[in-house]
Image 1 (tube, one colour):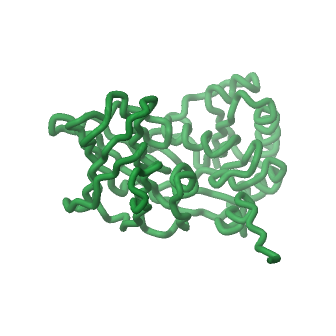
Image 2 (image 1 turned 90 degrees about the vertical axis):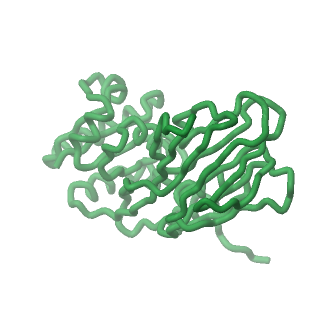
Amino acid sequence: MTAGIVARADKPEAATLTRSLMEALGKRGVEVLLETRTAEAVGARGVDEQQLGAACDLLVVLGGDGTILRALHRMRGEAPPIFGINVGSLGFLTGVHGKEWPKAVESIVAGDFRLSVRTMLRVELVRGGATVEAFTGLNDAVVSRGQHSQLIKVAVHIDDEELSVYHADGLIVATPTGSTAYSMSAGGPLLLPDSACLVITPICPHVLTNRSTVVSDHARLELRLVGGGPGVTVNVDGQEIRDFGPGDVLRISRAAEKLRLATLPGRTFSGVLRDKLKWSGSNV
């Protein structure tokens, strides 16, 4: 078995944990490959993310949810199952605490880990009738007014039928995985990973009846900018940011690719939610 390691190299504790994992996995016969910046942090040799994704059977990511998203986008579709170990506070994707790394090693060596298959987005930017760029995202696609104070108007069509024109700071289209990210902060619902749907959430809408809308993940969405000043952008997972202007069309649908997210056996998304959101019930 070959395991790749990607760490948030600017955190000293991530470098320390990388060394521990390299030693523990190596002693158990697992070949370990390191991403370039991770390798530099521990004084070793490494490879870039695309090579790493193609060469390893499992990718261990040390950091936070953002570290997973960055690695995923840099691998551009070459992602093996990802086992996230959090360096810092517990994340939704990195659902294993750093102090639990010995359990993670045993789980990886035994091949005994829980896999959660996550829906991803295909996001196409269409300009002049042609697709100029296409992205694959795990969390969301976000149309934002950027630094300007003026609200924007975004028309949304679902399967060629108009849903609404949102007058807001922006608009989020999220997967169930992304429902715990920006969409949740904007007031959207929490979706379980296997919900088979997408959620459309306006950011600070001018019309208070504009609420989040949940649609099937078989739906084909088209977003058009119909009002707003310059500087409007679209970003995918906060990683890929592009200008989005009048006449442009954003086509969003379920991607053919899926992410296989690994974690400790017995570790569930509901449990992560309780830990992360500190749900302990009420004694009222």
